[in-house]
Length: 194
Image (cartoon, rainbow, N blue to C red; front, top):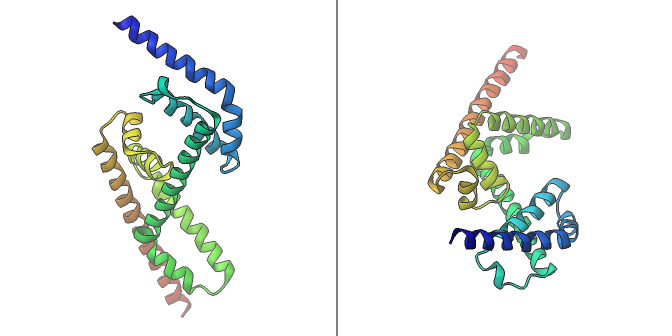
């Protein structure tokens, strides 16, 4: 029984390897039209991994258009997740910053503040635990499913969900604290100059 299962796995691997060798460059070139090289590479590799995991792989007639559709869906899902992350940050993390940006009347001031905001977000992201950071990166930034992230990290879907929500909550609290400190500094400067 084990030998038969091993043979089936080997046949599947050989089938996908043959497709990989035949179509990799074309699939990558397609992905590269929509994404930067690293993202295109990841999406292309993920397409072949998904193909290997397909439960009815042997029944499929796989063409280049089928592979391109897989990559297209992967890239679209990643984009949707990155848009959602930006929306979450805009809705829950940055409302006060957005108000300050709208109040700024010089382009130079807005640019400096946006750079400071991005630096704050990066610092806050760096303060998350590895698990929270991985969950946010995979779910929100890369567009992976909860199930995929759970399999990748070797934990349950519930744990991935908890890490993601804890990470977002910590980001919000950290950024709010930084804003309060910065606001206090500005108030002190204003008091000194007055």
